[in-house]
Length: 617
Image (cartoon, rainbow, N blue to C red):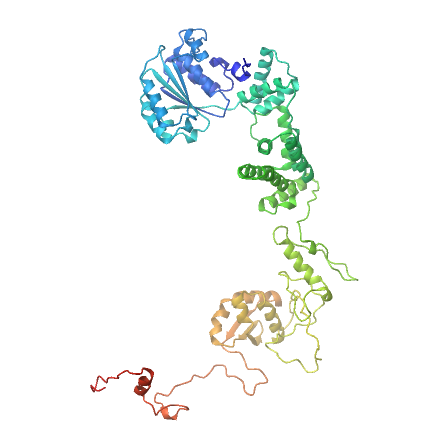
Protein backbone atom coordinates (compact mmCIF):
# COMPACT_ATOMS: atom_id res chain seq x y z
CA UNK A 1 0.00 0.00 0.00
CA UNK A 2 1.34 3.43 -0.93
CA UNK A 3 2.33 5.71 1.90
CA UNK A 4 -0.16 8.47 2.67
CA UNK A 5 1.02 11.92 1.62
CA UNK A 6 1.92 14.41 4.31
CA UNK A 7 -0.83 16.93 3.44
CA UNK A 8 -3.48 14.20 3.92
CA UNK A 9 -1.80 12.71 6.95
CA UNK A 10 -1.58 16.06 8.75
CA UNK A 11 -4.89 17.51 7.65
CA UNK A 12 -6.55 19.64 10.34
CA UNK A 13 -9.26 17.74 12.25
CA UNK A 14 -10.34 20.40 14.77
CA UNK A 15 -10.80 24.17 14.71
CA UNK A 16 -7.80 24.53 17.02
CA UNK A 17 -5.54 22.88 14.43
CA UNK A 18 -6.36 25.35 11.63
CA UNK A 19 -3.51 27.76 10.96
CA UNK A 20 -3.71 31.30 9.68
CA UNK A 21 -7.53 31.53 9.55
CA UNK A 22 -8.35 32.87 13.01
CA UNK A 23 -11.19 35.11 11.80
CA UNK A 24 -13.01 32.15 10.23
CA UNK A 25 -12.42 29.84 13.21
CA UNK A 26 -13.68 32.41 15.70
CA UNK A 27 -16.92 33.05 13.77
CA UNK A 28 -17.74 29.37 13.15
CA UNK A 29 -17.00 28.22 16.68
CA UNK A 30 -19.20 30.92 18.14
CA UNK A 31 -22.04 30.13 15.72
CA UNK A 32 -21.94 26.39 16.54
CA UNK A 33 -21.68 26.97 20.29
CA UNK A 34 -24.61 29.39 20.30
CA UNK A 35 -26.73 27.43 17.80
CA UNK A 36 -26.86 30.33 15.32
CA UNK A 37 -25.18 28.62 12.41
CA UNK A 38 -26.38 29.58 8.94
CA UNK A 39 -27.98 27.41 6.30
CA UNK A 40 -25.38 28.28 3.65
CA UNK A 41 -21.69 29.26 3.67
CA UNK A 42 -19.31 30.33 0.90
CA UNK A 43 -15.61 29.70 1.55
CA UNK A 44 -13.26 31.41 -0.94
CA UNK A 45 -9.51 31.72 -1.12
CA UNK A 46 -6.33 30.38 -2.79
CA UNK A 47 -5.73 26.69 -3.10
CA UNK A 48 -4.40 24.79 -0.12
CA UNK A 49 -5.40 27.29 2.55
CA UNK A 50 -7.94 25.06 4.37
CA UNK A 51 -11.37 25.67 2.80
CA UNK A 52 -12.45 22.01 2.48
CA UNK A 53 -10.82 21.05 5.79
CA UNK A 54 -12.79 23.80 7.55
CA UNK A 55 -16.02 22.58 5.93
CA UNK A 56 -15.39 19.05 7.25
CA UNK A 57 -14.61 20.34 10.73
CA UNK A 58 -17.87 22.32 10.62
CA UNK A 59 -19.74 19.12 9.70
CA UNK A 60 -18.12 17.40 12.69
CA UNK A 61 -19.11 20.20 15.02
CA UNK A 62 -22.74 20.22 13.82
CA UNK A 63 -23.10 16.47 14.49
CA UNK A 64 -20.73 15.93 17.44
CA UNK A 65 -22.34 14.39 20.52
CA UNK A 66 -19.64 15.73 22.87
CA UNK A 67 -19.37 19.29 21.64
CA UNK A 68 -17.21 21.53 23.85
CA UNK A 69 -17.39 25.31 23.28
CA UNK A 70 -18.05 24.85 19.58
CA UNK A 71 -15.15 22.40 19.20
CA UNK A 72 -15.81 18.81 18.04
CA UNK A 73 -14.42 16.11 20.28
CA UNK A 74 -13.01 13.93 17.49
CA UNK A 75 -13.61 10.67 19.39
CA UNK A 76 -17.34 10.11 19.08
CA UNK A 77 -18.82 7.84 16.43
CA UNK A 78 -20.01 10.76 14.31
CA UNK A 79 -16.61 12.48 14.35
CA UNK A 80 -14.78 9.25 13.50
CA UNK A 81 -17.19 8.42 10.68
CA UNK A 82 -16.76 11.87 9.13
CA UNK A 83 -12.98 11.67 9.49
CA UNK A 84 -12.96 8.24 7.79
CA UNK A 85 -15.27 9.44 5.00
CA UNK A 86 -18.04 6.96 5.94
CA UNK A 87 -20.65 9.28 7.43
CA UNK A 88 -24.17 9.65 6.05
CA UNK A 89 -24.27 13.17 7.49
CA UNK A 90 -21.68 14.50 5.05
CA UNK A 91 -22.00 14.61 1.26
CA UNK A 92 -19.20 16.06 -0.91
CA UNK A 93 -19.57 16.92 -4.58
CA UNK A 94 -16.83 18.08 -6.94
CA UNK A 95 -18.62 20.75 -8.97
CA UNK A 96 -15.76 20.87 -11.47
CA UNK A 97 -16.59 17.37 -12.77
CA UNK A 98 -20.30 17.35 -11.84
CA UNK A 99 -21.31 20.74 -13.14
CA UNK A 100 -24.44 19.77 -15.09
CA UNK A 101 -28.04 20.41 -14.18
CA UNK A 102 -28.74 16.67 -13.80
CA UNK A 103 -26.13 16.28 -11.06
CA UNK A 104 -27.57 19.28 -9.25
CA UNK A 105 -31.12 17.95 -9.46
CA UNK A 106 -29.94 14.64 -7.99
CA UNK A 107 -28.26 16.50 -5.12
CA UNK A 108 -31.41 18.50 -4.46
CA UNK A 109 -33.42 15.29 -4.37
CA UNK A 110 -31.13 13.95 -1.63
CA UNK A 111 -31.81 16.92 0.64
CA UNK A 112 -35.32 15.70 1.45
CA UNK A 113 -33.95 12.42 2.89
CA UNK A 114 -33.00 12.50 6.58
CA UNK A 115 -29.72 11.29 8.12
CA UNK A 116 -28.69 9.67 11.43
CA UNK A 117 -27.10 12.86 12.75
CA UNK A 118 -28.57 16.21 13.66
CA UNK A 119 -27.46 18.07 10.51
CA UNK A 120 -26.73 16.92 7.00
CA UNK A 121 -23.89 18.95 5.44
CA UNK A 122 -23.42 19.28 1.65
CA UNK A 123 -19.95 20.44 0.52
CA UNK A 124 -19.73 21.68 -3.09
CA UNK A 125 -16.09 22.16 -4.05
CA UNK A 126 -15.12 24.51 -6.91
CA UNK A 127 -18.70 25.76 -7.10
CA UNK A 128 -17.75 28.44 -9.65
CA UNK A 129 -17.47 25.63 -12.24
CA UNK A 130 -21.24 24.95 -12.15
CA UNK A 131 -23.09 25.73 -15.35
CA UNK A 132 -25.67 28.50 -15.40
CA UNK A 133 -28.52 25.99 -15.48
CA UNK A 134 -27.07 24.04 -12.54
CA UNK A 135 -26.56 27.24 -10.54
CA UNK A 136 -30.14 28.32 -11.17
CA UNK A 137 -31.39 24.86 -10.12
CA UNK A 138 -29.52 25.25 -6.82
CA UNK A 139 -30.88 28.71 -6.06
CA UNK A 140 -34.32 27.86 -4.63
CA UNK A 141 -33.08 25.01 -2.43
CA UNK A 142 -30.13 27.11 -1.26
CA UNK A 143 -32.48 29.92 -0.26
CA UNK A 144 -34.95 27.72 1.66
CA UNK A 145 -33.26 24.38 2.42
CA UNK A 146 -34.78 21.81 4.82
CA UNK A 147 -34.09 22.55 8.48
CA UNK A 148 -31.62 19.68 8.82
CA UNK A 149 -29.48 20.73 5.78
CA UNK A 150 -26.46 23.08 5.66
CA UNK A 151 -24.68 23.96 2.37
CA UNK A 152 -20.95 24.80 2.30
CA UNK A 153 -19.71 26.08 -1.06
CA UNK A 154 -15.96 26.31 -1.68
CA UNK A 155 -14.29 28.17 -4.55
CA UNK A 156 -11.00 29.70 -5.59
CA UNK A 157 -12.74 32.28 -7.79
CA UNK A 158 -15.75 33.82 -6.02
CA UNK A 159 -16.29 36.40 -8.78
CA UNK A 160 -17.49 33.63 -11.09
CA UNK A 161 -20.18 32.52 -8.65
CA UNK A 162 -23.61 33.92 -9.44
CA UNK A 163 -24.39 37.02 -7.35
CA UNK A 164 -27.74 35.45 -6.42
CA UNK A 165 -25.87 32.50 -4.86
CA UNK A 166 -23.40 34.74 -3.02
CA UNK A 167 -26.25 36.76 -1.57
CA UNK A 168 -27.85 33.62 -0.09
CA UNK A 169 -24.72 32.53 1.81
CA UNK A 170 -22.37 33.78 4.51
CA UNK A 171 -19.11 34.56 2.73
CA UNK A 172 -15.79 33.84 4.48
CA UNK A 173 -12.51 34.68 2.75
CA UNK A 174 -9.46 32.52 3.46
CA UNK A 175 -5.93 33.90 3.14
CA UNK A 176 -2.49 32.48 2.46
CA UNK A 177 -0.31 31.60 5.42
CA UNK A 178 2.65 33.71 6.50
CA UNK A 179 6.18 32.37 6.10
CA UNK A 180 6.62 32.16 9.89
CA UNK A 181 3.42 30.13 10.19
CA UNK A 182 4.52 27.72 7.48
CA UNK A 183 8.00 27.37 8.97
CA UNK A 184 6.47 26.40 12.29
CA UNK A 185 4.17 23.88 10.54
CA UNK A 186 7.06 22.28 8.61
CA UNK A 187 9.24 21.97 11.71
CA UNK A 188 6.36 20.40 13.64
CA UNK A 189 5.64 17.88 10.86
CA UNK A 190 9.34 16.98 10.60
CA UNK A 191 9.54 16.40 14.35
CA UNK A 192 6.26 14.51 14.59
CA UNK A 193 6.95 12.25 11.61
CA UNK A 194 10.62 11.75 12.46
CA UNK A 195 11.83 12.92 9.06
CA UNK A 196 15.49 13.39 8.18
CA UNK A 197 15.49 16.79 6.52
CA UNK A 198 18.46 19.21 6.55
CA UNK A 199 17.80 22.61 8.14
CA UNK A 200 18.53 24.47 4.89
CA UNK A 201 15.71 22.54 3.23
CA UNK A 202 13.06 24.11 5.48
CA UNK A 203 13.47 27.58 3.96
CA UNK A 204 13.39 26.07 0.47
CA UNK A 205 10.19 24.15 1.25
CA UNK A 206 8.51 27.27 2.61
CA UNK A 207 9.62 29.23 -0.45
CA UNK A 208 8.11 26.64 -2.80
CA UNK A 209 4.86 26.58 -0.81
CA UNK A 210 4.33 30.35 -1.28
CA UNK A 211 1.71 30.61 1.45
CA UNK A 212 -0.20 27.40 0.75
CA UNK A 213 -0.09 24.78 3.50
CA UNK A 214 -0.89 21.95 1.09
CA UNK A 215 1.77 23.03 -1.43
CA UNK A 216 4.30 23.38 1.38
CA UNK A 217 3.70 19.84 2.65
CA UNK A 218 3.81 18.54 -0.93
CA UNK A 219 7.22 20.20 -1.38
CA UNK A 220 8.33 18.60 1.88
CA UNK A 221 7.22 15.24 0.49
CA UNK A 222 9.48 15.76 -2.55
CA UNK A 223 12.45 16.68 -0.36
CA UNK A 224 11.92 13.56 1.75
CA UNK A 225 11.51 11.35 -1.33
CA UNK A 226 14.74 12.69 -2.86
CA UNK A 227 16.72 11.99 0.29
CA UNK A 228 16.95 15.56 1.51
CA UNK A 229 18.14 17.05 -1.79
CA UNK A 230 16.84 20.58 -2.09
CA UNK A 231 15.31 21.65 -5.37
CA UNK A 232 17.51 24.34 -6.83
CA UNK A 233 16.11 27.53 -8.30
CA UNK A 234 19.53 29.05 -8.80
CA UNK A 235 19.08 29.45 -12.61
CA UNK A 236 15.99 31.61 -12.09
CA UNK A 237 17.71 33.66 -9.39
CA UNK A 238 20.69 34.06 -11.71
CA UNK A 239 18.29 35.17 -14.45
CA UNK A 240 16.86 37.88 -12.20
CA UNK A 241 20.37 39.04 -11.29
CA UNK A 242 21.37 39.19 -14.97
CA UNK A 243 18.30 41.29 -15.80
CA UNK A 244 19.18 43.67 -12.98
CA UNK A 245 22.76 43.96 -14.31
CA UNK A 246 21.51 44.39 -17.91
CA UNK A 247 23.71 41.47 -18.97
CA UNK A 248 22.05 39.82 -21.96
CA UNK A 249 24.60 37.02 -22.25
CA UNK A 250 24.20 35.92 -18.64
CA UNK A 251 20.43 36.10 -18.91
CA UNK A 252 20.27 33.88 -22.00
CA UNK A 253 22.74 31.43 -20.43
CA UNK A 254 20.55 31.24 -17.31
CA UNK A 255 17.48 30.42 -19.41
CA UNK A 256 19.41 27.73 -21.28
CA UNK A 257 20.71 26.18 -18.04
CA UNK A 258 17.24 26.14 -16.51
CA UNK A 259 15.75 24.41 -19.55
CA UNK A 260 18.66 21.97 -19.56
CA UNK A 261 17.82 21.04 -15.95
CA UNK A 262 14.32 20.08 -17.05
CA UNK A 263 12.50 23.25 -15.93
CA UNK A 264 9.69 24.07 -18.33
CA UNK A 265 9.66 27.55 -19.93
CA UNK A 266 6.30 28.26 -18.28
CA UNK A 267 7.74 27.33 -14.90
CA UNK A 268 10.72 29.63 -15.56
CA UNK A 269 8.39 32.49 -16.38
CA UNK A 270 6.13 31.87 -13.38
CA UNK A 271 9.06 31.65 -10.95
CA UNK A 272 10.65 34.79 -12.41
CA UNK A 273 7.29 36.56 -12.24
CA UNK A 274 6.90 35.62 -8.57
CA UNK A 275 10.44 36.79 -7.82
CA UNK A 276 9.86 40.15 -9.52
CA UNK A 277 6.52 40.54 -7.75
CA UNK A 278 8.21 40.08 -4.38
CA UNK A 279 10.76 42.73 -5.33
CA UNK A 280 7.94 45.06 -6.39
CA UNK A 281 6.09 44.60 -3.10
CA UNK A 282 9.25 45.38 -1.17
CA UNK A 283 9.93 48.42 -3.38
CA UNK A 284 6.52 49.99 -2.69
CA UNK A 285 6.68 49.16 1.03
CA UNK A 286 3.88 46.58 1.05
CA UNK A 287 3.60 43.84 3.64
CA UNK A 288 5.32 40.59 2.67
CA UNK A 289 4.40 38.04 5.34
CA UNK A 290 4.82 35.16 2.87
CA UNK A 291 8.58 35.84 2.60
CA UNK A 292 11.25 34.56 4.91
CA UNK A 293 13.94 36.90 6.18
CA UNK A 294 16.45 35.70 3.58
CA UNK A 295 13.94 36.03 0.74
CA UNK A 296 12.92 39.49 1.93
CA UNK A 297 16.54 40.65 1.98
CA UNK A 298 17.09 39.24 -1.51
CA UNK A 299 13.95 40.96 -2.81
CA UNK A 300 15.01 44.26 -1.25
CA UNK A 301 18.42 44.10 -2.93
CA UNK A 302 16.83 43.27 -6.29
CA UNK A 303 14.31 46.11 -6.02
CA UNK A 304 17.02 48.65 -5.20
CA UNK A 305 18.98 47.65 -8.31
CA UNK A 306 16.04 47.53 -10.71
CA UNK A 307 13.75 50.34 -9.56
CA UNK A 308 9.97 50.51 -9.63
CA UNK A 309 9.66 51.39 -13.33
CA UNK A 310 11.91 48.52 -14.40
CA UNK A 311 10.09 46.01 -12.22
CA UNK A 312 6.70 47.14 -13.48
CA UNK A 313 7.82 46.80 -17.09
CA UNK A 314 9.35 43.39 -16.36
CA UNK A 315 6.11 42.16 -14.80
CA UNK A 316 4.19 43.26 -17.90
CA UNK A 317 6.61 41.66 -20.36
CA UNK A 318 6.87 38.34 -18.50
CA UNK A 319 3.09 38.23 -18.03
CA UNK A 320 2.54 38.81 -21.75
CA UNK A 321 5.10 36.12 -22.56
CA UNK A 322 3.22 33.60 -20.40
CA UNK A 323 0.04 34.42 -22.30
CA UNK A 324 1.84 33.99 -25.65
CA UNK A 325 3.11 30.56 -24.58
CA UNK A 326 -0.33 29.09 -25.26
CA UNK A 327 0.02 29.52 -29.02
CA UNK A 328 3.80 29.55 -29.46
CA UNK A 329 5.33 26.85 -31.65
CA UNK A 330 8.45 26.92 -29.44
CA UNK A 331 7.58 27.62 -25.78
CA UNK A 332 11.01 29.03 -24.94
CA UNK A 333 10.92 31.76 -27.62
CA UNK A 334 8.43 34.13 -25.89
CA UNK A 335 10.36 33.85 -22.63
CA UNK A 336 13.70 34.49 -24.34
CA UNK A 337 12.33 37.48 -26.27
CA UNK A 338 11.00 39.02 -23.05
CA UNK A 339 14.32 38.39 -21.29
CA UNK A 340 16.29 40.04 -24.12
CA UNK A 341 14.05 43.11 -24.05
CA UNK A 342 14.56 43.35 -20.28
CA UNK A 343 18.30 42.75 -20.23
CA UNK A 344 19.23 44.89 -23.24
CA UNK A 345 18.29 48.59 -22.98
CA UNK A 346 18.80 49.12 -26.74
CA UNK A 347 16.61 46.19 -27.82
CA UNK A 348 13.40 47.99 -26.92
CA UNK A 349 12.53 51.54 -28.01
CA UNK A 350 9.09 51.62 -26.43
CA UNK A 351 8.04 54.45 -24.14
CA UNK A 352 8.26 52.13 -21.14
CA UNK A 353 11.86 51.20 -21.98
CA UNK A 354 12.83 54.86 -22.33
CA UNK A 355 11.18 55.67 -18.99
CA UNK A 356 13.17 52.86 -17.42
CA UNK A 357 16.42 54.30 -18.73
CA UNK A 358 15.46 57.76 -17.46
CA UNK A 359 14.70 56.35 -14.01
CA UNK A 360 18.10 54.65 -13.90
CA UNK A 361 19.75 57.96 -14.69
CA UNK A 362 17.74 59.73 -11.98
CA UNK A 363 18.63 57.10 -9.39
CA UNK A 364 22.29 57.27 -10.39
CA UNK A 365 22.27 61.06 -10.15
CA UNK A 366 20.58 60.94 -6.75
CA UNK A 367 23.18 58.52 -5.41
CA UNK A 368 26.11 60.36 -6.98
CA UNK A 369 26.99 57.45 -9.28
CA UNK A 370 27.29 57.21 -13.03
CA UNK A 371 25.30 54.86 -15.25
CA UNK A 372 26.69 54.14 -18.71
CA UNK A 373 23.74 53.66 -21.02
CA UNK A 374 24.35 52.05 -24.37
CA UNK A 375 23.51 54.30 -27.33
CA UNK A 376 20.49 53.66 -29.47
CA UNK A 377 20.97 51.16 -32.29
CA UNK A 378 21.69 53.12 -35.49
CA UNK A 379 22.07 51.94 -39.06
CA UNK A 380 25.68 50.86 -39.77
CA UNK A 381 25.96 53.29 -42.71
CA UNK A 382 25.65 56.23 -40.30
CA UNK A 383 27.93 54.81 -37.61
CA UNK A 384 30.92 56.87 -38.79
CA UNK A 385 30.97 60.58 -39.63
CA UNK A 386 32.82 62.04 -42.59
CA UNK A 387 35.06 64.93 -41.55
CA UNK A 388 37.22 67.44 -43.40
CA UNK A 389 40.97 67.09 -43.42
CA UNK A 390 41.56 70.20 -41.30
CA UNK A 391 38.49 70.50 -39.09
CA UNK A 392 37.38 68.05 -36.46
CA UNK A 393 33.77 66.90 -37.10
CA UNK A 394 31.06 67.90 -34.70
CA UNK A 395 29.31 65.03 -32.92
CA UNK A 396 25.95 63.88 -34.19
CA UNK A 397 23.14 64.74 -31.80
CA UNK A 398 19.91 62.89 -32.43
CA UNK A 399 17.05 61.97 -30.10
CA UNK A 400 16.95 58.36 -28.90
CA UNK A 401 14.08 56.18 -30.02
CA UNK A 402 12.27 55.76 -33.31
CA UNK A 403 13.65 57.84 -36.19
CA UNK A 404 17.14 58.07 -34.67
CA UNK A 405 18.76 56.39 -37.69
CA UNK A 406 16.91 58.62 -40.17
CA UNK A 407 17.89 61.78 -38.30
CA UNK A 408 21.55 60.73 -38.08
CA UNK A 409 21.58 59.78 -41.78
CA UNK A 410 20.23 63.22 -42.68
CA UNK A 411 22.92 64.99 -40.65
CA UNK A 412 25.65 62.86 -42.22
CA UNK A 413 24.31 63.68 -45.69
CA UNK A 414 24.69 67.38 -44.89
CA UNK A 415 28.30 66.99 -43.72
CA UNK A 416 29.47 64.57 -46.46
CA UNK A 417 31.72 66.21 -49.10
CA UNK A 418 30.15 66.88 -52.47
CA UNK A 419 32.33 64.30 -54.21
CA UNK A 420 31.16 61.47 -51.97
CA UNK A 421 27.45 62.02 -52.40
CA UNK A 422 25.67 59.45 -54.47
CA UNK A 423 23.40 61.94 -56.25
CA UNK A 424 24.74 63.70 -59.40
CA UNK A 425 25.85 67.34 -58.94
CA UNK A 426 22.81 68.63 -60.81
CA UNK A 427 20.42 67.01 -58.37
CA UNK A 428 20.32 68.71 -54.97
CA UNK A 429 20.38 66.19 -52.09
CA UNK A 430 17.53 65.89 -49.66
CA UNK A 431 17.87 68.19 -46.72
CA UNK A 432 17.58 67.23 -43.09
CA UNK A 433 14.56 68.36 -41.15
CA UNK A 434 16.70 70.33 -38.69
CA UNK A 435 19.05 72.95 -40.28
CA UNK A 436 22.68 71.86 -40.30
CA UNK A 437 25.56 74.24 -39.51
CA UNK A 438 26.46 76.39 -42.58
CA UNK A 439 29.36 75.21 -44.68
CA UNK A 440 30.49 78.79 -45.45
CA UNK A 441 29.59 82.21 -44.04
CA UNK A 442 27.00 84.12 -46.02
CA UNK A 443 27.93 87.74 -46.60
CA UNK A 444 24.50 89.12 -47.43
CA UNK A 445 21.14 87.59 -48.27
CA UNK A 446 20.24 87.41 -51.95
CA UNK A 447 16.70 88.27 -53.13
CA UNK A 448 14.74 85.27 -54.40
CA UNK A 449 14.69 84.58 -58.18
CA UNK A 450 11.01 85.45 -58.40
CA UNK A 451 11.78 89.10 -57.50
CA UNK A 452 14.98 89.47 -59.50
CA UNK A 453 14.98 86.88 -62.33
CA UNK A 454 17.99 88.29 -64.26
CA UNK A 455 21.54 88.13 -62.87
CA UNK A 456 23.19 91.40 -61.99
CA UNK A 457 25.57 92.91 -64.57
CA UNK A 458 29.09 91.72 -64.22
CA UNK A 459 28.23 88.40 -62.68
CA UNK A 460 30.13 85.57 -64.44
CA UNK A 461 27.98 82.81 -65.82
CA UNK A 462 28.65 79.36 -64.43
CA UNK A 463 29.04 76.52 -66.89
CA UNK A 464 28.33 73.83 -64.29
CA UNK A 465 25.06 73.30 -62.55
CA UNK A 466 24.82 75.36 -59.35
CA UNK A 467 25.68 73.51 -56.16
CA UNK A 468 22.94 73.20 -53.59
CA UNK A 469 22.71 76.23 -51.37
CA UNK A 470 23.77 75.66 -47.75
CA UNK A 471 21.18 75.69 -45.01
CA UNK A 472 20.38 79.27 -43.96
CA UNK A 473 22.23 80.54 -40.95
CA UNK A 474 20.41 81.90 -37.94
CA UNK A 475 19.20 85.44 -38.84
CA UNK A 476 21.12 88.34 -37.34
CA UNK A 477 19.01 91.16 -35.86
CA UNK A 478 19.13 94.31 -38.02
CA UNK A 479 20.21 97.48 -36.27
CA UNK A 480 19.11 100.81 -37.76
CA UNK A 481 16.69 101.51 -40.58
CA UNK A 482 15.18 98.60 -42.52
CA UNK A 483 15.62 98.32 -46.26
CA UNK A 484 13.39 96.73 -48.87
CA UNK A 485 16.14 94.27 -49.83
CA UNK A 486 16.77 93.24 -46.23
CA UNK A 487 13.08 92.71 -45.53
CA UNK A 488 12.73 90.76 -48.81
CA UNK A 489 15.55 88.40 -47.82
CA UNK A 490 14.14 87.91 -44.32
CA UNK A 491 10.64 87.33 -45.72
CA UNK A 492 12.01 84.65 -48.06
CA UNK A 493 13.45 82.77 -45.09
CA UNK A 494 10.25 83.20 -43.08
CA UNK A 495 8.06 81.92 -45.94
CA UNK A 496 10.03 78.66 -46.05
CA UNK A 497 9.01 77.96 -42.42
CA UNK A 498 5.26 78.47 -42.88
CA UNK A 499 2.57 75.91 -43.51
CA UNK A 500 2.03 74.80 -47.14
CA UNK A 501 -0.85 77.16 -47.99
CA UNK A 502 0.74 80.17 -46.29
CA UNK A 503 4.12 79.28 -47.78
CA UNK A 504 2.66 79.34 -51.33
CA UNK A 505 0.99 82.72 -50.70
CA UNK A 506 3.99 84.48 -49.15
CA UNK A 507 6.35 83.27 -51.83
CA UNK A 508 4.34 85.41 -54.30
CA UNK A 509 4.34 88.60 -52.24
CA UNK A 510 6.60 91.55 -52.91
CA UNK A 511 7.79 94.17 -50.46
CA UNK A 512 6.32 97.44 -51.72
CA UNK A 513 7.58 99.80 -49.03
CA UNK A 514 9.15 99.94 -45.57
CA UNK A 515 8.11 102.84 -43.36
CA UNK A 516 9.84 102.54 -39.99
CA UNK A 517 8.44 99.38 -38.41
CA UNK A 518 5.57 99.15 -40.90
CA UNK A 519 6.02 96.87 -43.92
CA UNK A 520 3.63 97.00 -46.87
CA UNK A 521 3.39 93.79 -48.90
CA UNK A 522 1.81 93.55 -52.34
CA UNK A 523 0.07 90.45 -53.64
CA UNK A 524 -0.39 89.48 -57.30
CA UNK A 525 -4.14 88.99 -56.83
CA UNK A 526 -6.63 90.63 -54.53
CA UNK A 527 -8.14 87.20 -53.77
CA UNK A 528 -4.96 86.19 -51.89
CA UNK A 529 -5.24 88.96 -49.32
CA UNK A 530 -7.59 86.94 -47.12
CA UNK A 531 -5.24 83.93 -47.07
CA UNK A 532 -2.24 86.14 -46.39
CA UNK A 533 -4.15 87.87 -43.58
CA UNK A 534 -4.80 84.50 -41.90
CA UNK A 535 -1.06 83.95 -41.41
CA UNK A 536 -0.16 87.60 -40.74
CA UNK A 537 0.38 87.23 -36.98
CA UNK A 538 2.73 84.26 -37.51
CA UNK A 539 4.65 86.17 -40.19
CA UNK A 540 4.96 89.27 -37.96
CA UNK A 541 6.33 87.17 -35.09
CA UNK A 542 8.88 85.38 -37.31
CA UNK A 543 9.96 88.64 -38.98
CA UNK A 544 10.36 90.29 -35.59
CA UNK A 545 12.62 87.41 -34.50
CA UNK A 546 14.61 87.53 -37.73
CA UNK A 547 15.04 91.33 -37.83
CA UNK A 548 15.27 91.95 -34.09
CA UNK A 549 12.36 94.36 -33.66
CA UNK A 550 8.54 94.29 -33.56
CA UNK A 551 7.00 94.82 -36.98
CA UNK A 552 3.58 95.48 -38.49
CA UNK A 553 2.59 93.96 -41.83
CA UNK A 554 -0.01 95.50 -44.18
CA UNK A 555 -1.26 94.21 -47.54
CA UNK A 556 -2.21 95.63 -50.91
CA UNK A 557 -4.20 93.82 -53.55
CA UNK A 558 -1.69 93.64 -56.43
CA UNK A 559 2.10 93.54 -56.69
CA UNK A 560 4.00 96.28 -58.54
CA UNK A 561 5.10 95.59 -62.10
CA UNK A 562 8.77 94.64 -62.75
CA UNK A 563 11.13 97.48 -63.67
CA UNK A 564 11.71 96.05 -67.17
CA UNK A 565 8.04 96.23 -68.21
CA UNK A 566 7.07 99.18 -70.43
CA UNK A 567 4.26 100.38 -68.27
CA UNK A 568 3.55 99.89 -64.63
CA UNK A 569 0.55 97.81 -63.74
CA UNK A 570 -2.07 99.97 -62.07
CA UNK A 571 -2.81 99.28 -58.43
CA UNK A 572 -6.29 98.06 -59.26
CA UNK A 573 -7.33 96.36 -62.43
CA UNK A 574 -10.00 98.29 -64.36
CA UNK A 575 -13.41 96.75 -64.58
CA UNK A 576 -14.54 95.46 -68.01
CA UNK A 577 -18.06 96.58 -68.93
CA UNK A 578 -20.05 94.58 -71.50
CA UNK A 579 -22.25 96.60 -73.81
CA UNK A 580 -25.94 95.90 -73.43
CA UNK A 581 -26.59 95.79 -77.24
CA UNK A 582 -24.04 93.96 -79.45
CA UNK A 583 -24.39 93.46 -83.22
CA UNK A 584 -23.52 89.80 -83.81
CA UNK A 585 -22.63 90.48 -87.45
CA UNK A 586 -19.76 92.67 -86.29
CA UNK A 587 -18.14 89.85 -84.32
CA UNK A 588 -15.23 88.00 -85.95
CA UNK A 589 -16.08 84.51 -87.30
CA UNK A 590 -19.75 84.93 -86.39
CA UNK A 591 -22.08 82.71 -88.45
CA UNK A 592 -25.16 84.85 -89.11
CA UNK A 593 -26.33 83.09 -92.29
CA UNK A 594 -27.66 80.03 -90.47
CA UNK A 595 -30.55 80.42 -88.07
CA UNK A 596 -30.86 78.55 -84.82
CA UNK A 597 -33.70 76.39 -86.16
CA UNK A 598 -31.54 75.26 -89.07
CA UNK A 599 -28.73 74.30 -86.67
CA UNK A 600 -31.15 72.23 -84.57
CA UNK A 601 -32.48 70.48 -87.67
CA UNK A 602 -28.93 69.54 -88.72
CA UNK A 603 -28.11 68.33 -85.22
CA UNK A 604 -31.22 66.09 -85.03
CA UNK A 605 -31.89 64.58 -88.50
CA UNK A 606 -35.54 63.60 -89.13
CA UNK A 607 -36.92 65.88 -86.41
CA UNK A 608 -39.85 68.26 -86.91
CA UNK A 609 -39.64 71.76 -85.45
CA UNK A 610 -43.00 73.12 -84.26
CA UNK A 611 -43.65 76.82 -83.67
CA UNK A 612 -46.23 76.90 -80.89
CA UNK A 613 -46.95 80.62 -81.24
CA UNK A 614 -47.80 80.49 -84.99
CA UNK A 615 -48.95 76.89 -85.07
CA UNK A 616 -46.65 76.01 -87.95
CA UNK A 617 -44.06 73.32 -88.39
